Image (tube, rainbow, N blue to C red; front, side):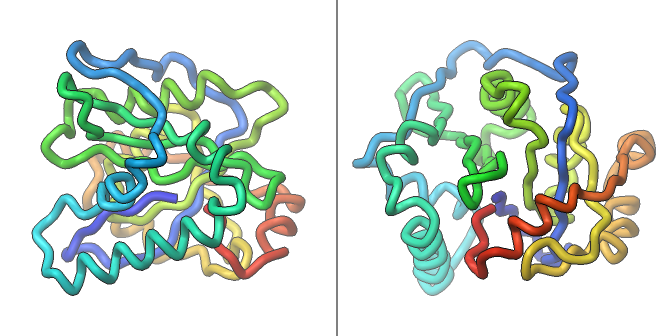
Length: 220
């Protein structure tokens, strides 16, 4: 799961799948930053990372509740595993500035969760390094890998595409609508022409669609 806010772009749902990793997209973390796992005492910091935009106390409270509910519904019963999986990027002061990890949604399918780089650290190659770190640890049997995103994350969608992710064409994924038809004109408007033309569209495997429909809880 991923969350990017943009008032200019409607909040629609998109899904992507990677069946074959393009390792030529790999990049190492820039100098001055390091990876480590999230500590239990940093859970509130982890939740707050998506709130790196001007917001009111009401919005802060609303989003923290969303994150708390998600943690409780998806991770709480496997909290030890969550902290083993939850990767952070930190600056030279060991302050978290990015995050992302792979999670077995519904205990069956590999998914990318909560990929994020704070806005002030964007455009430094940190996001690419996060994807490199989490994708290079996957084994052949972990594929395909899935993710959920939004059209406002068009820069991330370009990055995912570089790694081998394709947009999923199926009209529904679990109990969520897939808004691909509505989102393609948005992506075409905001993405450079060459990046948009490189996007690929595929059908999801039937087993994945069946697994996603086993629960009303959105696990990715």
